Length: 315
Image (tube, rainbow, N blue to C red; front, side, top):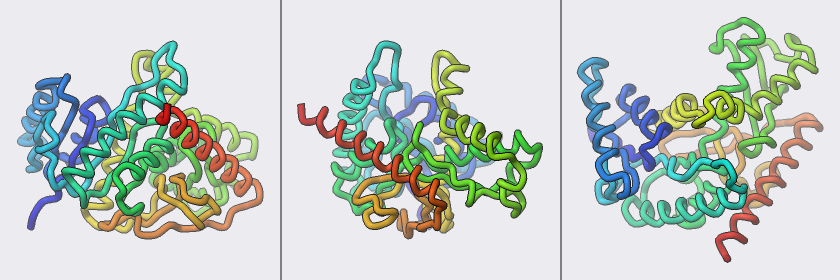
């Protein structure tokens, strides 16, 4: 049986760590690609990771390259390309720069792997996945953003820390955009089947939700010279696994919503069934009035972000 071909575009911390997780789980053969200016760096990381295979006992083949021809006919492509926000850089600078990078990457994907399923990780996530879809012209089920898996993992981590329980016993869900307007859903959060609202007082739960929204920023402040990569990469690997092994996982992803949740044609974080066809189904939840209001606020923020991006690209 042919192994899945997994391409990871961007060989920085998130991309290389994603390659590590995918290889260790033997999800397929991996191509780790970066821009030509990085010269032999992707090849070096790939060779280093291959040399770990006898120790951990995995047989995935890993190729490092700066040439998109090595990615031809990929089954799944993870896009981590882009720059982080730097001191003195405005939000518009980041949005404009990364939109141009993602546009260029999307054009290459469209040319070399027209049947691929694409997972976007680049920030600002909600706008970047929209631009990937618009540029590739792929069916919306084959383009998605990684955010909900990461945000849910952070939420579950903080809940487990608060309650002193295993993260395995916590089930949680988030909706909306990635960032300050994400919407953790307490009505869909439980610990060993017990609603979290019965275990944590409202004001304390609100504080945990606020920490979840600031999860990435907290790590940036602690690291001082970088941003999170272990958890984002693990979240990508979980999505890749769901696709290549047709797991039918019910997990939150940034997916294209039209009538769903009244969104009207944008990518927002929603619970989906993720399998070999990509986003196979979107699950619509029954929300409380507060949750509904929070989701609509998040959708409005995503729409503004996309509009700002399109204005900047048109200049």
